[in-house]
Image 1 (cartoon, rainbow, N blue to C red):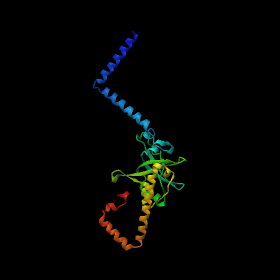
Image 2 (image 1 turned 135 degrees about the vertical axis):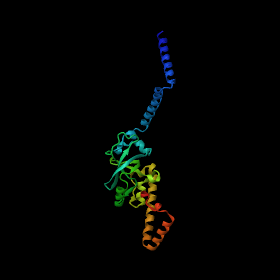
Image 3 (image 1 turned 30 degrees about the horizontal axis):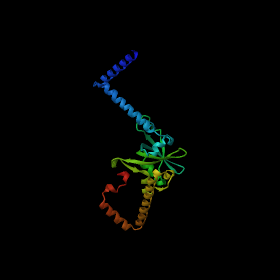
Image 4 (image 1 turned 120 degrees about the horizontal axis):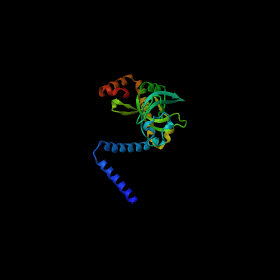
Length: 241
């Protein structure tokens, strides 16, 4: 008797719940969509918990899983510093949900594959401070004082095009190619090979410019021909268009 009464009670409650859920009420919709959204949020947090709400301010805060998966992050470039012959950019990391974002929390980032010269440091300080950027962490330093990251500027005139900073410095001859600890990692070899080719191309162009500088008349003729073929906008440097 007791078992039958408990069974009847459960069945009646279940049928009552089903009848309630079948009604087209605001409360039902809120319950359904709220539960689904909460389950989705929990699943996402379990998948990528570190940069969902908390900004990175130390390399150790970046999980190895995100580095291995080459996950892209965004932030604002706050400062450029030179420490022990390394050029360090301080970036305010912006998490996916910037609840705890702060200007005082900055992540030290080192540009990969290059040694920046004095002209390059001046260029960085004058051209990219305060700019929005994306970065992909490649490897953390052993002393936890910086993270080597592929850094790109978001270039609005090009519809959100990303401009690689290391590549740009090599093209301007404001840096030289210098492989670091991230170059030995298999997933980064293709990128470092690309930087090496960029430097070789830039040095070849530089040698041609030095040769042309010794022949002013030829240099003047080439400049006039180029001005006739290309528009004034395309002749401007890429970051000032």
